[in-house]
Image (cartoon, rainbow, N blue to C red; front, side, top):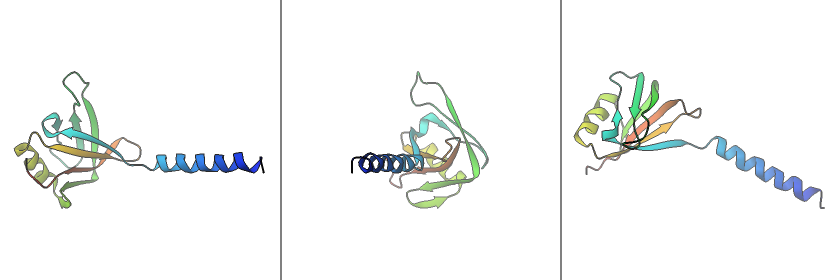
Length: 110
């Protein structure tokens, strides 16, 4: 029995690690801190704080844009962000953390 117990714990550890590998990665960024691309494929630049280094992520043709739960075009989201600079938005990254899979803001205005 003592030899089976550690193997069982190892199995649980592997299962937990597998769950972490598929977890979504997301960033919360204020609209005023982000520069949206002018085309569907491009780069998003943002800063988390005044002293933070500027970061850049790529958007792809597969990147989705949402206001609330409603899918919108990139131009629509961009216009909405310009009117709501204090809005916190979600940048959901791809599994490899190199591209933006989804950009979402709440439907409610400030």
